[in-house]
Length: 129
Image (cartoon, rainbow, N blue to C red; front, top):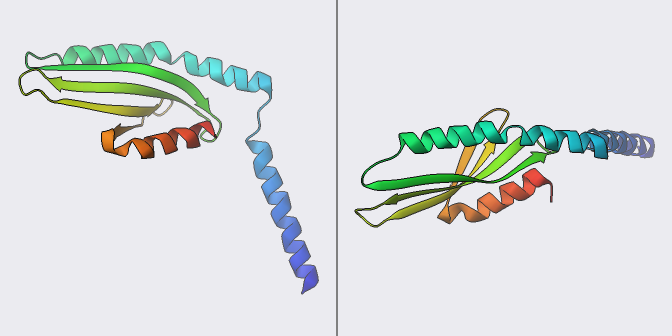
């Protein structure tokens, strides 16, 4: 029984050690990944500009701006954080949200004012902080 426990523990340690190695990048590799992520900025800005142009209206204002672009070791992907505002000029209301965009898959998640704790948790997870 003791041998089985020790063997199982040994296998767990090997498995966990192997997983931790996969997430580690050399400084040069990490720099290359970050540089790759920056190349997506222009495409994202063009998409935002197009969306802003399409959403122009007489009775409302829309804008979205890029706050940050970063590489996530956890997801092995590039992400952008944008700040978005939509306001009515007639009814005096404003909606703000944060958007996290996976730049490789174009999947995005919006976080409204009441979801900011979820937003901060997700950013922390992606940045592995």
